[in-house]
Image (tube, rainbow, N blue to C red; front, side, top):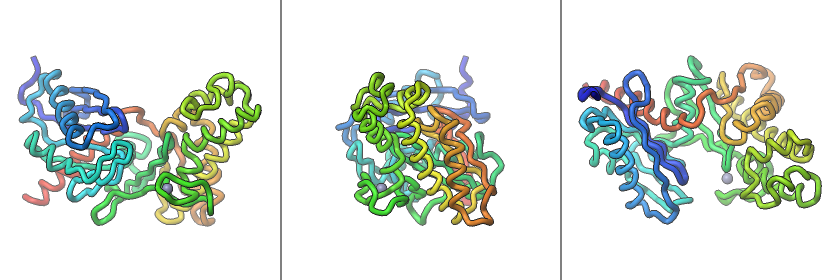
Amino acid sequence: MPDDSAQYWMGFDLGGTKMLAQAYDLKWNVVAKERKRIHPGTGAKGGVERIIDTINEALTKAALNPKNMLGIGIGCPGPIDMNKGLLLDLPNLGWQAVPLKERLSAAFNCPVAVLNDVDAGVYAEHRQGAGKGARTIMGVFAGTGIGGGCIYQGEILRGGTNSCFEIGHMQVMSNGPRCGCGQRGCLESVSSRLAIAAQCARAAYRGDAPHLLGAAGTDIANIRSGALKDSITAGDKAVEEIIKEAARYIGIAVGSVVNLIAPEIVVLGGGLVEAMPDLFVPQVAKAANKRVMPAYKDTFKVVPAALKDDAGVLGAALWAEYSLSKKEKAAS
Ligand SMILES: [Zn+2]
């Protein structure tokens, strides 16, 4: 029999196309779970209803009483107004200024914290993963795009209203490739999977990456992290060089951040790093150490993320617990 009085926190990860709701008991064990797809073209209104349905179904399946939900943390792939709990912009779904906090707290009658999904993942690493016990940690997640987050003295580093730490849009190359944000030479335009896949597709087309050509062809949609890894293992030197160069640029960006805020731990994650940690981690560490001022050399550790797929949803729930409990204490 489920315990009808058991309290829990709800974490929610609003991915680009997939959504995940996970409830956690007070010892951070998963006690409910539900996944749903979200289709491009779903407007923000329908999308919010789908989020609410997903949470309700997770609760129903696990026979959890909605009255015992202490709060919801929801991580979203876009910039957030953290005071108002607004998802400001979600270009791939065409959503703008979505009042998630208002809608979810009305639907579930509990407090809600809205945060950026990469911030959520880095926050989970700070509480339970590779950054435990550090005063400052930063995270770089390299996949289709490049996201970043920073935890400073136990808090998500943020602006007066907005989430921040968009390391993917730090300029690392003057007059470099055009980025989705409209600028040129952003880290994301040089080192994301899409940027790497485009270069590797050209190498394959020229005949410089025969294994990749055979396995994935020259369509960048098919050149996923796993295919890149396999082609390097099979001997495609050109692919290895392209990836080392991309990792070097990530290291340059990391080094610039080390000069600014001196994190002790730099967590690397995302699909590219998960597929090739032995390539990325040392390359980024080497390039970052080359880039920093002498006093900062070897003052930081570059490590792979310790938490895997559900770091984002766990981090959202952990942040809800931290930020919403703190508010309650301040009010009493
Ligand atoms: Zn950019």
